[in-house]
Image 1 (cartoon, rainbow, N blue to C red):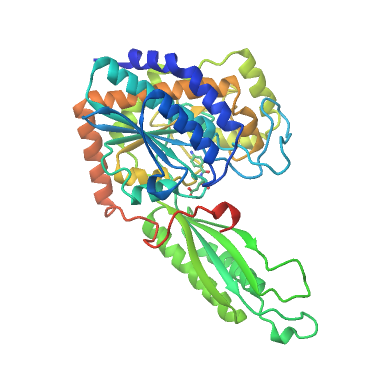
Image 2 (cartoon, rainbow, N blue to C red; image 1 turned 135 degrees about the vertical axis):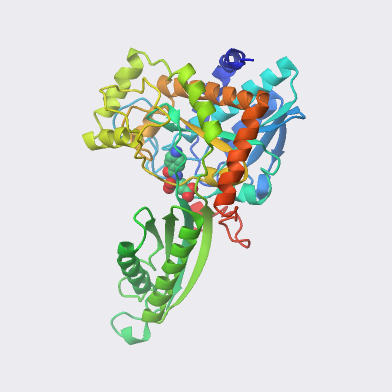
Length: 474
Ligand SMILES: Nc1ccc(C(=O)N[C@@H](CCC(=O)O)C(=O)O)cc1
């Protein structure tokens, strides 16, 4: 049976509430683990729609699960709602204009991400009820994707134990099945402690923690030549030991992000960076403590689910953008460089056009060259067969984590993309639920891939708890 039109009718029937939800979350940008108001908005909507609600998932106050339906398989829709620091930006203007100096902003479009996933879950719930079908649909409200690895902690706490399939999406320039490539990523703090002293009168008595951080950077930069070319290491200074040059800095702290193609590669690189930190401590006669903040795994793809989603996305087609959508996209593109635009076209391996907004579906076998980051969806994909979509919420070429993404995040084009992708996700969930062969093929493909890679071990060490205070340097 083809259920798509029924699912799509349910999405259209509910969409206005979810567009409003997305816009409200856009207006209250909250970063890593501080998403109190954003999760409250999602909980209120789950309650309104009649989901059974579990709050404080994995002891994370801003994580929630809503479930509906009885018996049958469990289809999980993954949502996010965290923002990014320093990206405050007005909506609907094509120039950098902060709402609040230094404020946060939805520079990765997670206001749309969470709302569309919840819309897909709601449509599927209503469709199950209308057809009196066995099956459960779950919305996972996941905070802190931007570095907090909430899903890795939720996986570790068993929140996905009985889920059969997981479906998610991410805002993008294009309409496509998300290529299942991402890097495993560990964030670790290196905390150096030395001894303060008068930097002129008694420098020989001081031991500088700041020197240790600098020497560590030098060591890591020498390591770069001798690491796999797709590995990534970057850092942020959390504590430089104070503002006085005449006080030898007794404390300093640097946060590293260490990424590699897979978990064994990442663990090896983390070990090498740790040795460099130890060497820096030895050279400066300081002490060093390493604290893992959070970690995520690479994404495991799923052939049958990707093919099913591709078919649905081709049938649906990209959102229908009108002249006003295209005009604003043109204004945004005027703020981008040709390199920004060329880079996203190269990523999908499709010949470049002048289109301002995506008007085609990227073929599954396109010769892609994607820019690869990390996501905590990776950990879900190691324990549940998982598939993700990209939908065009932004003008083609818009780099993520920029004010341009925030400026476009509650425009009509973004709303159209979130509704269209909710349709693709809901139809994929229904396709798996009603096609035991597809379900079996997805599970077999999942088991084969996970076994080939030696099974799943959490990238988060057992003693590490969700870093609920990470955004304040904790
Ligand atoms: N479809 C996307 C998924 C993740 C990201 C992203 O920027 N993720 C962060 C989070 C990293 C992490 O979770 O370890 C990153 O790569 O730095 C961007 C687009």
